[in-house]
Image (tube, rainbow, N blue to C red):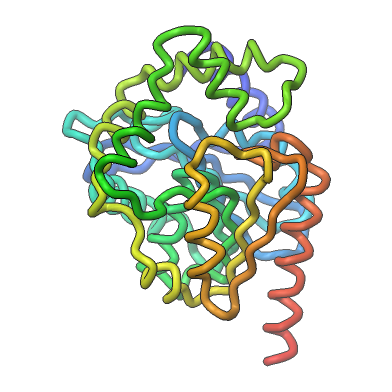
Amino acid sequence: MDTVDALRLRSLHMQGARSRLFQTSLGTLHTLDWEGLGPRPPIVLVHGLGSCASDYGSLLRWLRRRHRRVIAPDLPGHGRSQTPTVPLTAARMTLALLEMMDRVVEEPSIMFGNSLGGIAAIRYARLRPNRVMALVLASPGGAPMGWPELLQFKKTFDLSTNRAAMQFTRRFMGAPQPGMSFVARGVRVRMSRAGPRSLLEEVTPDVLLSPEEVQGLRPPTLVLWGDQDDVLPRHNRRFFSENLPAHGRFEVMPGLGHSPYLDDLSAFGARLQAFVDGVLQTQNSAA
């Protein structure tokens, strides 16, 4: 971890979050586990490519006041999790995440995923449906692409220059914001690491989502998409809006980017919480 990430993690530790390490088929994986102060079910946050659990710091603190427990794993090759010695394929990442989550998630929980974390959350919900009470996704990745489009998409992650890093940062944050140049430098450093590079290199069309995977989701599902998000190709938005099951919802959040909780935590948190409370109310009524 670099100095900024280490300081963020230390701050969360000082506030009561604890780090837990688990041995998996891809080496040692790290997760943040924080006892909450609220009555709602546990919530799990899965980060995106090049990100890490401590990036969710503000959202973790917000959710901790409302939920019994908040959990944020570092995906393989990210944050404090070990960088695998083998190519980081989607199948290996999914298996390692399952191996860790089977020891962390002890009851039906809310699952949240952003970007790469979105496809990871979807695959987890399909493989462990009894552990997922509801699914919330922000600009999830994984929509189908053929080879020409996928290769073009991968090129957008070439952040070998400061200019390219700034252009990428504007695509995921939307309108220019204070501190954007600092964020761009951090994004460039993170995307140069072995874990994100390996995962990106190993993506092929056959590991992306099928319409049937999304249509077959069993938990109540909310997909939120910032209308300023230009990280993912436009058809990704259409794929999810058209393939959610009947009990799923797709909503566009005006003025927000690829990670809407970074742009407006209050608006994002209110929408997430209203959805969770609606799920709980429906379950209580059925009981």
